[in-house]
Amino acid sequence: MKRAAVIALDIGATSIKAAVLDTEGNFLAKASAPTQGAAGPERVLDNAAALAGQLSRGLAPKAIGVSSCGMIDPRRSTVVYATSVMPGWAGTNIAAGLKARTGLRCAARNDGDCAALGEALYGAGKGAAVFAMYTLGTGVGGGITIKGRLLDGENCAAGRLGHVKVHPGGRLCACGARGCLEAYASAYACRAALEMEPKQAFALAAKGDKAGEAFVHAAANALGLAFADLANTLNPGVIAVGGGMAAGWRLMKAGIMETFAANALPQACGSIRIVPAVTGNDAGLLGAFALVSKKF
Ligand SMILES: [Zn+2]
Image 1 (cartoon, rainbow, N blue to C red):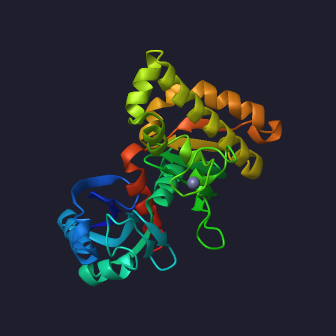
Image 2: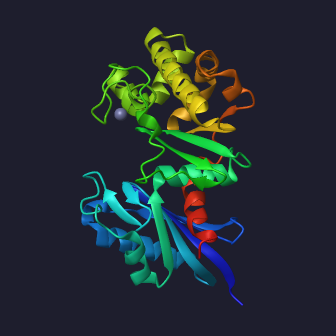
Image 3: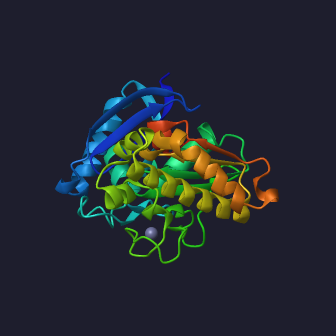
């Protein structure tokens, strides 16, 4: 008998990562291919289905879980908004497109949500009744889980943690508002302030460079404020920090903790753990797996 398996796809703007996992969530194989988003949604779905087919040879896959860039309506597995790098991706029903190509049932969600779900179930958030993940990438993505399930909100827009206001009227954010966390603790913020990537800013800060240190200080302060507000609102057991900027955790940690302690109520921060995420690049694939592993 062929071994039961689940396919997980992580569709990014430049590449599609794919994995096949057993029903317990262990990786059996991985592969990746260019997204070719500029060629339109049909090509993206063709590429995703080809990867899924290639990986599942000799196995009996039961479903496909998809983590995708863009805003996704998880109730319909349909893209609501995508950047211009992926023309036509908005409006695409990912589940229907992949089912037509593979015959398999499918569910899709936004990549930030999937990373949060993956980290909640298989990473730093394991066992936490309330968990929040902050992904510090180009922007700040995030997600909140309650007892292992993503908090959707009324309109599936909950957990937009990068746009919490940490400094009203402060730095301009990519979203158009001022003072968002993302305007202080992301690659976008680093490029705007120093015209460099966070990795370079961290290297400068480690050498005692004033501009590098100022970026680190502002990022850590903004994160500490955001975490304190979240703790006062939801009393999470664990907050995890992932994404490229988590590489600067060692430099930011003291500043984050100091600001957090000064702003969170004692009852809300007593047993909280604020830690780097542990699932790394696999978070999205693990979240995609979790979307369908129990559902189908
Ligand atoms: Zn914003």
